[in-house]
Amino acid sequence: MTTVSETATSPHSAMAGDAAPMVSIRGVSKSFGTNEVLRDIDLTVNKSEVVCLIGPSGSGKSTLLRCVNFLEVYDRGEIRIEGKLVGYTEETPRRRLSNRDLRSLRRNVGMVFQQFNLWPHMTALENVAEALVQVRGMDKAAAGAHARRMLDRVGLAAKADSYPARLSGGQQQRVAIARVIAMEPHLMLFDEPTSALDPELVGEVLQVMRDLAADGMTMVVVTHEMGFAANVADKVAFLDHGRIAAFGTPREVFHESTEPRVQQFLQTYHERNSF
Amino acid sequence: MDRGFAGIEGPSMKFSVIIDALPHLLGAAVTTVWVSLLGVLLGQVIGLAVCVARQSGGRAADMAGGVYVSFFRGVPLLIQLLLIYYMLPLIGIDVPPLVASIAALGLASGAYVSEIYRGALNAVPHGQSEAALALGFPDRSIWTRILLPQAFRISVPALVNELILLLKASSLISVVGVAELTRTSQTISAANYRPLEIYLAAGVIYLAINGALALFGTLVERRLQQA
View 1 (cartoon, rainbow over the protein chains, first blue to last red):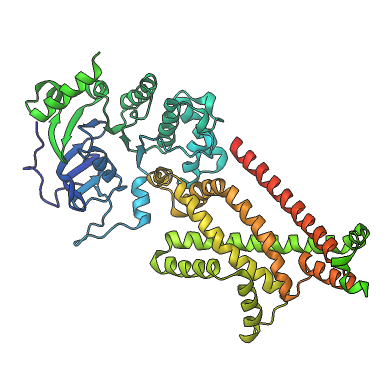
View 2: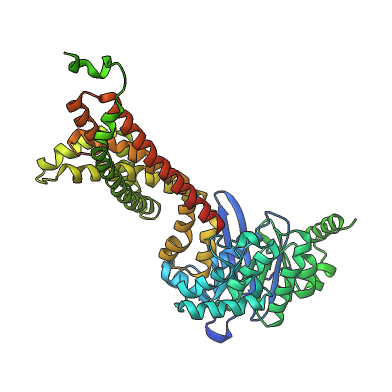
């Protein structure tokens, strides 16, 4: 149930190509100054799996997620996406990847943020089409047509010409998801995608995420939505003080874990959500 | 006898003097406007380049930019103007006063504009560029498509302010002999001994130009807000 750090500690354990898991995190640690925010994290995400990262605030969930696409730099250990080392070269001692290599890695990894981060000076359609033009080099017309299909997929075709300020939080987050799936990523990272939303808007975003999961998208989701974690996730990792304190299927973590910190966390969660 | 002190002891203002001088004053005002616009344009280019270089060009670029900003913000424009005007011939560059003036205005304005853009860039939330980074945007696209358009919107009021300040500061180039509005007013009033009327007219012309600029700024702001 707790993660197994006794497997795979060899730095050369990663496989390449199709056999490699979508994400493989081995012995990853990170400090902000003297504050150790991630301690020796091991985690594997297989293709088409949905893995939820849960735990109290400050436990390191978001930091771990942001290390996966190297928005956050990890100090020790290694993270591999489809066998490719994230952020560093393969040589020893390793060096930081060039911006160009980092970009090509990030092209296959989509990220959805808590604050949506839509670009306010562009319409919904332009928000989705922009990366297709800037990153994939599509011409404007093709990008626009593709973007329109993506907006349709998240149920917002009618809002294509609206600026973000005119959209509800839930709609903005769905546009942000459309912006990511337009790039056809192999992996999607969600950083508390519903935490900034009014309660009545959470459902529409979770529904889009459920649809993505059903389509076989590999997803790593930092969330406080225990219902989503319980019903949609294949695996749940409970983080506490920068460690994975519990890992397993939702049933194993939510119902069978004897880990006191998990039980305490769930207890607090239930109390807060009962009335 | 009475001519020598006409400006002070004249019994009343003679508005006919203004009418006579108006064609000259308006012609000079046109010079003021286009010299200022060229100065502002140059200042925009320099300011933007300095700002981007300081933010993304490493320590050396940041320090060079810092020296530039502190010099051109810290030395009075009049002194800068005279320095440029007298220094360029020394190093073998013989420039007409007009070119020296536009260069001085542009360099001074660039220092302020780079700080305006720096402030505006700081006001763009970090998540804006992070979203682009996560999608794999090249740095250049992040600047041109995400950061600068937003920074520009934020800085429009400050830029209009800068434009107005610069237009007024352009009166200083009269000292190197450019026949703009202030210089022309001096020349005319030295000839007709009617400084009060002429400077009053010049002041009204400055006011009108800046009123138009302020109005233009408001329109731009309103236009951008609609988006």
